[in-house]
Image (cartoon, rainbow, N blue to C red; front, side, top):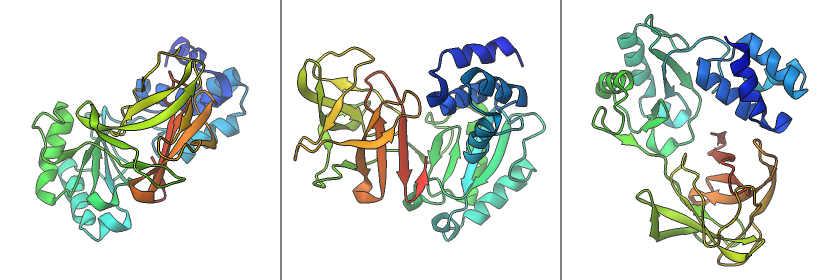
Length: 282
């Protein structure tokens, strides 16, 4: 591990408020969180090593041991379990010749099981490098492994490769915020009103989870703070949460008819977000 690389990642952040973002960047580079990296994060941000370690162990997305180039996660939550997830997991174990939490000898694939992936209606769910596969059966496991190794998700490598789209509504009046007529990357947009220094206008974001582009009616600087409003009832959608990446207030919307909540950073240039579905934070 090169110390200077870790320091560069930390310097690009904004201190304590960006601990999760820092750890995400470190893991993306090294596939796990080396002990030396955790100590550097603690020293450079002024956080205690205990706090940094606590974050690293609390979120299942982080790993303290080396992982493979690709990661495959199979859900064993109740909804997936009753739909045959155990059979799917057994097939992965057999074809990869490893147990959950282990990595293939060529360091290509790490296989793990999780308690919930927040998309219960689509179970059994398998996520491979961020790509959701819904209603997975034993027969599809071989194709998913092949697509994972080849990086061909979404180009015919595996069947039933789902994007994670969602419905959004106002938490106050319950009206839908989906604008099917205005699409972003082929998906309906979410439309809310926002107040900026130059006045009130609309903002649209994709209804596709993982894409956090913000399209504004009026131009605004990247660091501009936007006050989100419901276009139907005018309610201020700003919640109590602060962005984990930049500490700005977050705008909150209901997801899938109340099945969850999504909070999106009100700073124009920040992609900070928190999505909770069926009790699971993604």
